[in-house]
Every structure is written in structure tokens, then in C-alpha cells.
Length: 312
Image (cartoon, rainbow, N blue to C red; front, top):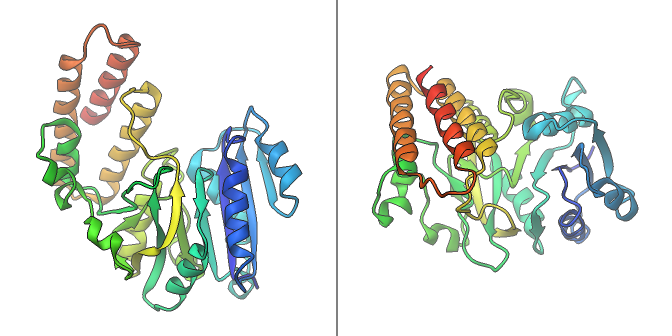
């Protein structure tokens, strides 16, 4: 029985996947943990698969002929591992989901595993993330509430943006050596106990992209498990930095997932308020967008699409 099954999902990541795999494998090879890596490629058009085949022959490569999205691709790997009926005593003790845009630092994986296994009530752990330049990155969040929706659209004092009103944990918690309880960790590093998967199932595949780890963490917490961020486990996460460029496809999918999340986990009254906040916010975005903005028509169309989804 393996200690750890590692799952990575790629899509056109040839330029970064070697660093991600090399760093996590090098880290694991300094530990006594038994492990195996599964990689699902979402129909990349670059040479991601060739890079993996050439440099990582022990990685179990699953090549999809279509882009399955994050949820379905991870679920495909977890089912191949055996979480579709294999006897529990033959399954790995834990599954570690990592993004292809991560670089694992020394002893991070062992610290995550030890923390996960040393607490009976803990079902999920995640690492402390930093950006490529070493600067601070929020690694875990509180479940989305109305305050977080508000800050998406309306002027908000900085202390609220960086605080609990916007679902953030204090930087002091990350600076501590002690693991701390969170609502959910970013999907960039998400290590789960075997029993959690057996009890709660896998990702909800209705989430194509965005919010899938939030939904799963919500279900895991509702099932009675605790979730921890482990500051001593350090992983560089190259993604996650904000951009001023609005991508219409991403915007629509982001809000489609968020609205689905609200429908699953909010009481009816809060769903009603959330949808109207989104509708009003999108109206403000439409009114404020400069007509000289590149791709103006596509962005306006995306805002209107999100408004219509929230209204329906």
C-alpha cells in the first residue's frame, strides 16, 4: 500500500511542468514515504506529454483527447488510483493534488503528510504558498460569504479587503510555525486522507473550472473533518497573481461556478441576496467600462451573460 498518490493535471504546461515534477519528486526522495505520481494531460497542443515521457518515465501518464477541466481530470486520476471501488486497504493512505505551476521546497511534502496523519480529525492539509519572487500569497480562505461578493464590485477599505470580511486569514498565522484551521486551502496544494475520499466522494464535476476545491472542502467540513494550512510546508505557486486584463471566457466560467456554489451551500435568502449583488455589480461594470478598452464588445457581452445567469 502506498503512503501517497500524487496527482497533477496539465494543459499546455510544457514550460513549467519539469520544475513542478522535479521539485516534488526530489522532495519525496528525501523521505521514507512510498509514492507514485499520476499526471492527466488535458489535450495539450504543446509538447507537455513529450517532456513528461522523456524526463519522468515513472510518472503514470493519462492522456485525454479532450480538455476535461480541473474536476473531471483529477477525478479521472483518482479513479485510476482506485477510488472507484478498490478495497480500502489497497488504496494509498493519502492523495496529494498539486498544480503544475508549483515548485516544492525541501521537506514540504513530509510536513504536510505528518500533519495530516498525526491528527485524527484532520482530513485535508495545504501548504504555505508564495509567489515566484518570494512574496506573500494567501494560501487558504474562509468560505465565500456576502462580504467577498461585495469586495468584487464596490469600493472597500484595504483593511477589510485583507481581513476576514473578504475571507482572508492574517499574515501572522502564516508566519507562525503552527498549523492553523481554515475553511479551505487553495487547490494548488491539497493533500487528503484516504478516508475523506471514501466518505465524501470526489470533485463535483459540474464545476468545470473554479470553486471545485471550495465545494469539496465545504462537503468535507460538513462531514466533520478539520482542514489545516501548514506554514512550515513551503511551496512556490507561480499562478494566482492578479491581472488587469479581463478574459471573457474565464469571467463567465468563474461566475457560473460561483453561482453554482451559492446554490449548493447558501440558504435560500442568502442565494437571493448574492444573486442581486452580482447583478448590480455587473451593471456597474458595464456602466464603468471604457469604450476604448481592448475587446470592449466581448467584455461587455461577458458581463451581460453573468448578469443574465444571476437573474435566472
